Image (cartoon, rainbow, N blue to C red):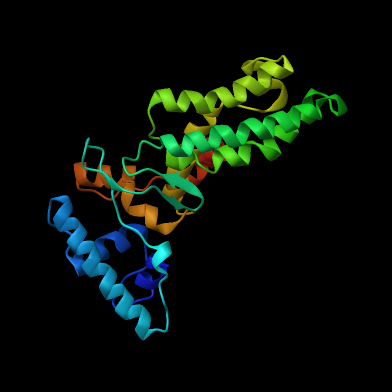
Length: 240
């Protein structure tokens, strides 16, 4: 509700996520350092949003509001964990809580799937895994991609455990059943995001985060150079 009220306020850009945060910083002046100063700014922002909400006949529920200071430095992060699009974020962005939830959720899904294994061949069981478990894992891919290797290993072990129970190797799963290792699928997903953005087929607010080869060559040579990216689609990670 906090986010929706803010984006619906007059004079605030909603063109992109980055635009939202920059507008947030400019409008409410969240530039001071120190947790006390940040909390003061947040309370001022909350008060302003409540005022705008009342002006638009929108009431914010106290129980659904909260503050969090995100920091990777020890002792700087504060506030309760929070969810965005169903994914749990901790205030240090280690994503340990999200991965804990993911592993627990996938364990019972795989147990349920394997109980039905006698009714299907290996290909059918793998298809069930792709339809019932993979979406649960890959929904979190962009959020957990930066997590520590020790945490990512817990995610990768989900599929390896499933394959062990089926008695097939990761190589067999890839070449015989089209099931690539999760670490490969994560890389393909993020490379595909970059590739679609360069082609202009992705979400537009990602454009400013990726610099194209044409721009780099233009800056280096001072000449306009055009590359036909469309001819590269058939060999791109986005098509796998």
